[in-house]
Length: 467
Image 1: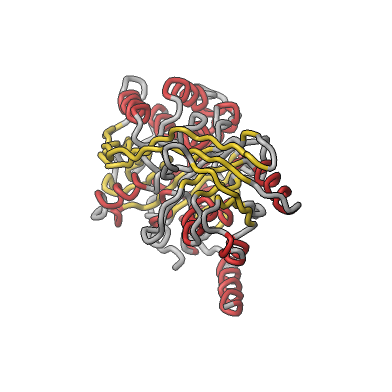
Image 2: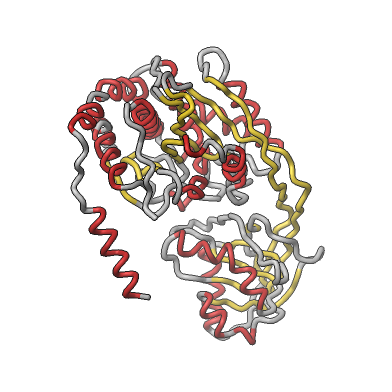
């Protein structure tokens, strides 16, 4: 296994090291867009649209708040944007909603009390999709484990207990499996509930939610997050040999699915309107905070970029399409519906972009593309030198929703200074206060510039992607 891994890494390194050999005509054509890109940058950072992405987003989240899958707030926010995008002064084209059936899960009671070795309340935040405890809650001894291997070692002690996961944080993508799979792994050994350390590198007693998933063949048990501080406290108590007794009450509802919509808006291409460059973010959020960071910012740079281009009279050869996905948080449901509805058109999708990891200071793009596509992106990003956003980074998969196309289409996501993204992610702290209006302006400029150039080049962006 380790030999094959090294071989893959060496191959990837050698492939990435290839010198770019684009034709001089193509390089010259890309560089000819510098004046247009400067126009976009100036309009968003100094001119008519300075601060406008922030203002539009702030009004939106102040008006609608959190936009959980199945909620009326989500549908009202969708209706608002559909009206706004085609109103006078915005004038986007082919504005419409595409129906998607989405789940409707509701959080209810969520309390936890430690009864022994002392009495104190422990704040909890139910994980998305969790089932309920019994109506009066469950009272049981808790057992703290440090990882799944630790759980396997003590499996004989788990039955009838509440399992607390206190893993060491590595990174979000390594540790989110405790939130996703932890409940079923504990239930397999007879646990009656789980508490999972919030998936974050930093905490000020901050609770983080997110989707949990259940294996069909294993009993479903209630699951909630606890803070890093409380997970560590329970670990210390157990390490001293003291018995921990908790009373946990989690109440949730799974209501009938409802009809939502992906939000679509376009600037129709002048030469090849059937070909599409797509920019996207997701419009839904969890029910904590107001969904400004996750993913209001990504959604708004993705439609506001088109508004900027439209106002500047920039109409590319291919169609620019903005899609705001619904029900991303519940398992990429909106994008899967789009994939099914547009399956016969995907071969005309030239390039797909998504922003869903913060909209802090933009640095460039992370992308999945073949070698020629990589070289084109490097040249295009050089045009963003006026805002210091010229970096490119080849990754295994880009975005969240659009990862479903990573082996099919060239894709990209916003590379930004998001080191603190997971401090706020899925928490009550996801508010407008995390944003710098100037950073949102620059991100809008990058998004609009890259999308426009790729949609307007004489040459289609090459579809080859790494396998």
